[in-house]
Image (cartoon, rainbow, N blue to C red; front, side, top):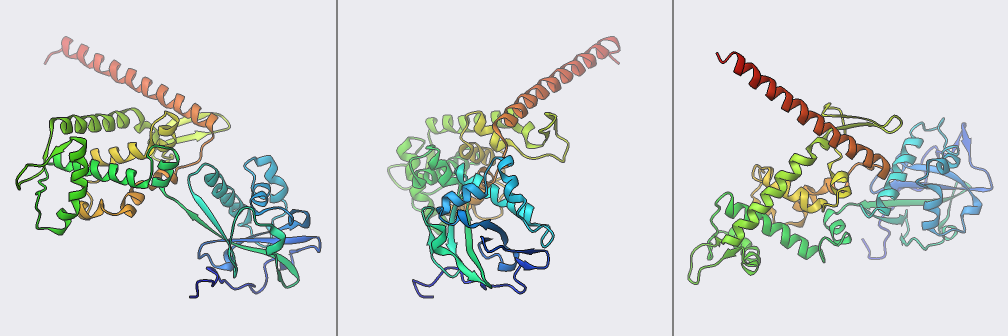
Length: 363
């Protein structure tokens, strides 16, 4: 492929063209916005006919106008969808609204390409990128949505940059395996996987968490390292105890009713962590590490922690979290803590009743 070749070259027309059907035609005063995601086939794409007075807008302005977060503002565009021709268009519209919400929340990045054309910035003027499709002007776009929990943590200022984040994560895994699981790392290893761990071990040496003997031998965890390990474990255990209830939430936003632990709810721990002022990347890494998930992994952990993609996959729930409004989330958190208090009272009463029964009938 030439350097100047378009990244996407999907067929420009489908047969029949979806907006040239018996149920719907595009007026002369309208243009078509067609959107596909990544390698999605062109015939599966979303489309909507829009008035020509939106053509002078920039791409960013168009997206905000057509896919607003306010449900009442969406009605104008929902009414423009050819639901007879494609009943899935309203659901596809909602999915695109969510894409732009996630981008606004910094949970993802979205790159926009013209089909058979170049990458567009948000400042690009819509009218300059319209093409003809059987008489109808078309803005034929391909969106690339990318998730990166590490980049998100940097944007949150949990870390200065991705390098610092990866160093912290890989070093905590090594510290845990060294201190809690008694993994022995030689200072002069013969194994390639162990050799790759040496820079990570050195970062722990610089923190004073492990020490390297003057002559050849093995890295040893220091007293300060054991304290750090205990703090990591205590932090993970506290998070599990306090927030595990939010792993299974059924919430009705209209009535405000919440049910927990039904087996049919949504995992809202990530939004709750953040609402409670915790760093979701740090919390998820420590819970996965200290709760045993990393210990049970099939791949060689020594090689895995050298790879950014390993941590991205592990932390994907941080950015692919369910979207919950602030007011709803506050209500869910209050209900969850009230539920836990009620459960604790009932457990206490049951224990007291059991002790009373034993005192009356010790046999």
